[in-house]
Length: 234
Image (cartoon, rainbow, N blue to C red; front, side):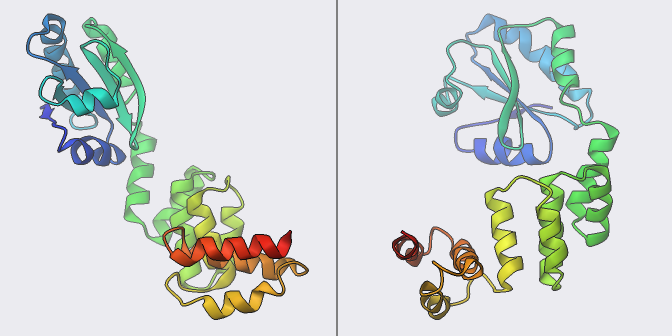
């Protein structure tokens, strides 16, 4: 069954939901003849997935914000959203077999469903099982590394993180693993002491950077300390 989505509910019903299940967004309007042709086909095909794909309908006349976000020039316009991002789409009314192919490509395989269940469980055992299925999956490695850091196995956590490209998520967990500090610690004394060492001591420089990572960009001290680090290095 389709969900009627508005500008106010788009974040929850489409973006947030797409992290659990693929969401097909149907941009339509009551006056649009091709939309009335396509709509029932989309509902039939998506309903047949048994909840593995969700259909969200957006009346573009009533919800211009969503239409602007998708930069819609004509309707019907259909987009597939997964993990908060558009991954596929098409314009205009399409025959049922084309819609079927579009939706079939979004239905997770049995292995993908199993992997999602293991990640959602979030225990060390389930995450290690998921890691065997996909050794380079960031969504597996980061939470597993967090569990390892929490119990003091920082070396294994860092080895896992080294398997995948560096991202904001991996930098934060790696900083925790290297420093052993809690994110909300008061770091002023440590940072001040490290400043005199950062130019000549690579380990001190890495620790300084790691602490800034833990403080995060929202901490008003972070930018000031970064400037001080740059001044000492150059």
